Length: 187
Image 1 (cartoon, rainbow, N blue to C red):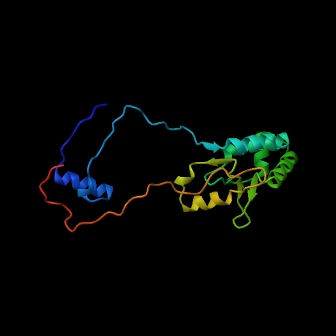
Image 2: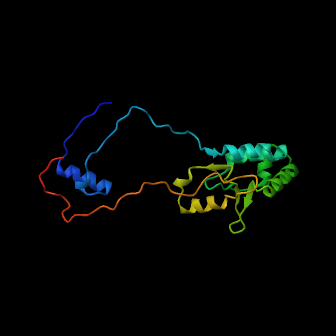
Image 3: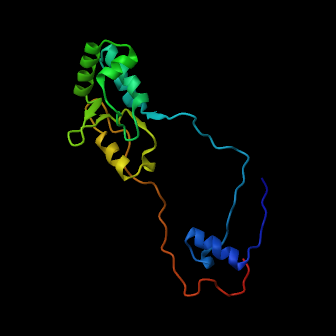
């Protein structure tokens, strides 16, 4: 990569300033980086699993059926940690398990707060202190609401994340009367 200097016209400078929502006179230097590196993308959906709470889950005295169901649910959850179309019989059928064993396992998972049933909307959520599908800071308001309902701190599972928006603090921009300055000074 090499450094190159380019002189911009006042119009180009004004367009860039408008795109950045600053005044043209506030622009001192603009850096553009070109790279041959390609961004990484995933071909399939993914979930983030939190190490400490997953280790706690592994140390819990869950039945093998309950543990197997939790691992299956890591792949079955939707954004906001909702278990779409929650059905014990479908889970039993998909995993090839006995329905009565699955029923006992689900009761155990609800008692241990690994699964959470919301009384308001009737949805079943996987506790988001174990696993999260998607990246929460990209969620819209509806998904963030669902995601909040899936979060339950227990004596077994510590809170794995904070709800905050990262961002930089910016200084207020002074607006001048003249949108395109005519000072005649190139930058």
